[in-house]
Length: 312
Image 1 (cartoon, rainbow, N blue to C red):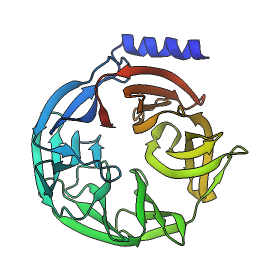
Image 2 (tube, one colour):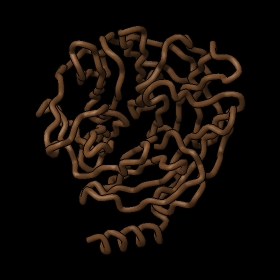
Image 3 (cartoon, rainbow, N blue to C red):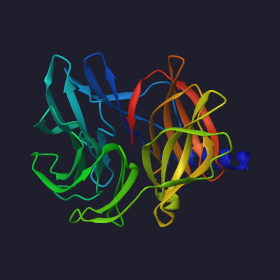
Image 4 (cartoon, rainbow, N blue to C red):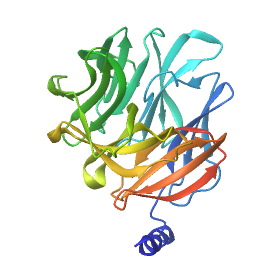
């Protein structure tokens, strides 16, 4: 099966079927937005635009998002020279021009960024953390207009938005309650359902450590994948798990990352293929990884010199 899959990839590459995908990384006190070919990976990403004097905010979860419908990329950036400054920056990845630069309250960590995959004005959904309150809002990424659609309790772990059904899932943690999953409608912010998720398929001897995190939607299977950390034999593994709302829980996959790796970013293929792409850091080096979701295997792993922090 692996040989057949390799042949399929080769044929697709030969036809030039795949374009470069946006990636983000920090370089000293600058943020670089560039491109990388997931199907014909090289050892470095290609730079397209440099935001000088700012860094992608890594102090919150999911601080960037990409709109596949419009080619717009939004990211939260902080200023190394001034910790009291925070901005939402938006790039047009077609013309590679800055089209939005909005100042935000630096005391509120803004994360969980998700585009609704439309060309509407307020098509960016974000989650701000103010104490133990999560502020869910729709934002116009160009002029900065903010419309708060709901407020929840807890600490943000991850988000994912299913564009076709307009479902927005927020996974959070609250002391005394534990991990919760809130499903919201992005039309009005109403909570559709809330549950404390179970995790099924956990091997004997595995101890929960943290997660879920780095959640992504998989169009090929209409599924939601996250990473959950478990400890076994004094080693911590990041296991892939599917969020199944109808079962009010996560189902563990047989796919897992290396015990010594730190998972930085991941995204499922958005063009209908069974791939999941990831960036992991291990022993000081960055690795680009390709997983075959259908077979539950790591298909490819290679070093990459570019310290990618976000990928789409």
